[in-house]
Length: 361
Image (cartoon, rainbow, N blue to C red; front, side, top):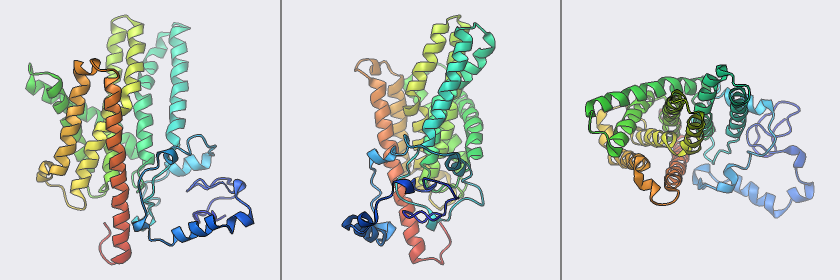
């Protein structure tokens, strides 16, 4: 069953294409297919993909969130990134992905959290408290991470690797940050906090992306987001536990709620930007320490540190929705980095098409 839209071979009885989401049941009539629109679409398909625009169309990015998706579509997503399922560079699409699984993950996490909340508040059962803290701390950071994973167009990182980086990278980055705090001792302020935590996450991200296997900008963005998600979740769990120890359940719930609402624009986005910036300057070269002083990397890293410092200062309380403004700024940078990542793939595909006998990059 070849998809009439993209040519992908789907299993039988699949209504929507597992690759592009095209629904054959809502296909147009023969007369419409012979219209000027379809002629124009066919003409566009003849244009070399390296010359197509990869500019974002925000109304289309989330167009598949509210569609009905089967288990086969989810299963196909979860098997990407292995040696057998990673596409070659010439097979990677440089158009904007349309993620949808992250919304389902959030719903599942929300249902789990509500069940744990009822167990604690309604039945007064303390056995539900650890699960409440863990699920509440990980729900939004992990959901945001799944969004980054779906946006990873090269599809060369398996989900098990992402989970590994979340836990190991999150813990490692927190330990490195504690080392920096111990060195600073009494010189703790929003600036030093921003430098220490972002430097700790950047060092951890570089440890994971230094191998040439993860050489794309989108790879750095994803693995950085994984480290940031682990950092954010463990930090939230710690603050929630402090609220519980104080004997105030209101503080426990408020901590989980507000930190979850702000999580997408904090550690997850910041670490993702640092990882993407490093992959952008490393490219196909082997890791060297002098890469860290390249202006392209330093500009992004310093901007991330400044946003983190502003986040922790009382200044954000002076003007309305200060942290929401910083969240929006972070995601503007994230989408700009995704665009650069897609353009990078387009350029590599163009180079492969014209120089197929060069070593694959």
